[in-house]
Amino acid sequence: MKELPLLFVCYLISSIHLSAQNCTQETLAKIPGKWIEGMKGSTGSTSATDLAKEKFIIGNIHKALQQAYKPMGLDADYNGIYYNTQDQYRWGNTYGYALRLMPYICTNNSTGKVHETSTSLTIAANNMAFGPEIYEPFIDSSPWDMGFRSINKLPVKQGNYYFYTEETGLGFGIRGIQANWLVTYDNKLPFLWVSRKEFLERRKQKLTQGRAQEMAQIKDSYKNDEKIQKEKLAIAMKGYDIALAKVEADLKMSASELSQQAIVKQDPNTVMTHLFTNADDPFAKILIKSNPDYFDKKLPRNSPQFFSIALKGNDKDLILGNGMKELEKALDFDALKNMLGK
Image (cartoon, rainbow, N blue to C red; front, side):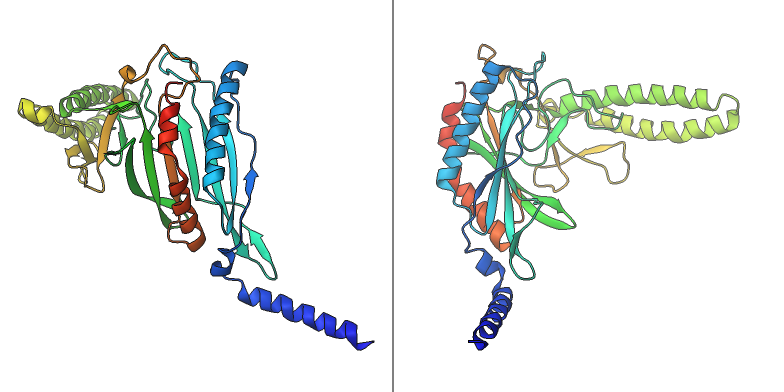
């Protein structure tokens, strides 16, 4: 009878050791995960009426995903986010659904879970879950900026949505994939493309203003040292003059060329000059501007007028990569399309 406890202890020790030895991503990937509601999202002083409608929409999105996606090897941490965006440039409240994939990991003698993740799904109403803000006003910070917002790739129309993928950084030197979708009113986008002529005319205006401002600043800063003032002015004005000359030369292109879509990149030889390129260039910036005519301004602010979806993460990781694939399959674009304007 005295030997039994000792045998039992030996069995437990060997079992724990075996469990730790057998813990791999492959074994973790077979463990059913859980849906866990995360921190309550901000309500941003949204009115009670708007908040009730928006929570109803986000709740339906969550229910559809929960039915279609079964997490494996990870927990699905989710929450809603709600903002009151009352201003003259926005035609709807912005709100959304956030889902984070929290994979299981092997610890010394048990299965644990990460506390942070770079793999996530965002579904946003009336707002861009990827890329830039699309509403006015747009104020860029310096004379040599592009003068317009930009996206990195051209969305491609596929059925009920627009779609493109791009490589993205996930932190700590890890690269991953971000898949982006736009669900919009039929054959429309909530932003407009910028023409080369529009870009060049704004560049000329910004550079001219920037040149005058910097000249005045240098003159004031070195008003007691004429020699240094002349040296500083010569260096600064040379950069502006080169950039302005390039803009003036480009403005002499044919009307057909000037009407083309503005896809630009920074000149590698000078920070103040941009070059026209194509959408396949890895350094391309596809310029966009606000499209107020897209929105039905008669609808209540809580109505979704477009959805943007971003699925971002480490597609090369076994558990996270599988989770991303299954989440993509679970997305119901037809259901999202049917919510628009309601």
